[in-house]
Image 1 (spheres, rainbow, N blue to C red):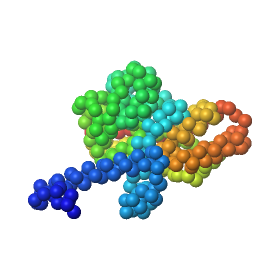
Image 2: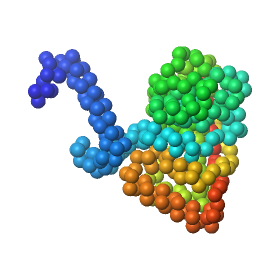
Image 3: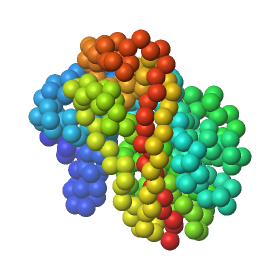
Image 4: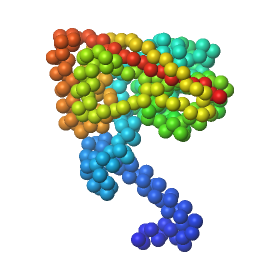
Length: 304
């Protein structure tokens, strides 16, 4: 109570403002502590919920998405090795032929950045996680790589002709990201979103997903609405196949956000189950090289 009185002071609006600022700072620190406990596997969601006066489900719902969004730095190398690129036809559709400059937002390890740089565009890549940026710089030395986020883009106004977001829009706060993206786009510029989705119509891929979903399930809207100030969104879809080795498939699994944030015992068990699938499934066993079928889904919208 004494601490509260010190913060509140003489009360009134000034006291309320000081108290609000203190609560925000404490909440930020609580989130940092929770991220530390989860990243170092020091506490379960049930234990965190108890410490916060919440249920396990309540704590998980409140903080797990944020923990997953910031978890990729723990597996940046696996992400770079295991994640697929994007089909050229999707890049053709996403980037206007007249574009000279493009921002890859939430660029990760540079899977899309690399394809953009090969087209001799002026490429800026913004990525908030240092470990991911390290992989990105090594993979695409010609790109202008910057620390930043979709909600606070480190570019001046009207800086680029196009903004693209690969496999990351679902981590953004769209209400904050959309005005920021509009700010850095030139008049008439485009926003493009793209996701690689495993093709579940292929039997062994469906079985792989069943293995993964025994532990966690991540639903992603790969055709999200794009609001103002952008015009009506267009959609494009392409089916293709990505060759990979057994080791790269395991890296693909290990780089999933919900796998990175699992307790070590659960993660090891999951990877063991995937290995068993590779050894036993009729379409996979004995094969050193595999082919992962994908459906790549794209959304494109133009700045009003």
